Image 1 (cartoon, helix red, strand yellow):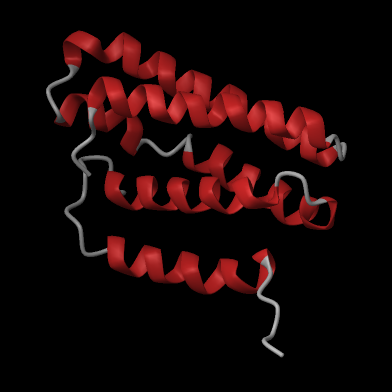
Image 2 (image 1 turned 180 degrees about the horizontal axis):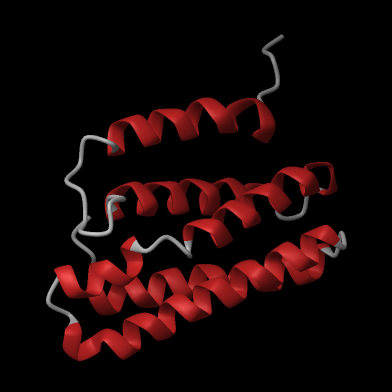
Amino acid sequence: MRPRITFRSAAAPLALGLALVASCCESEPTGVPVRTVMYELQYWKNSIEPNLRNSDEIDAMTEAGREILALSEVPSFAGYAAAQGLASRREQHDAYLADLRRAASVFVEASEGGDLDAMHSAFGTLNGTCIACHKRFNPAY
């Protein structure tokens, strides 16, 4: 019988591997490579989706939501718009970032309260924000 791989058992090794791969990328003026932040955001976001209806994984999903919220505060996001010549669209970029922070915050609150339905809704908003921003700005990370 194969061992069951859970979210908790796979999270740390995968996050470390992604961070190591991304660490070779060029740094932004703010010191943290946008590529590193994006890889980590993607990892945590993807780790939530398959567990959204699994009440046994609420603690792990809460932690993932906190990670996304923390990553949304990394100054590289502000530096990204300037570095990519997006100054004329900076307001839109900042609005997407604010939406990401809001959705991550709502997700964390819902997960701390154990409300799976609210978590599902907040995750949908969070994911939609990621998709909208990537369609608009097509980040070259």
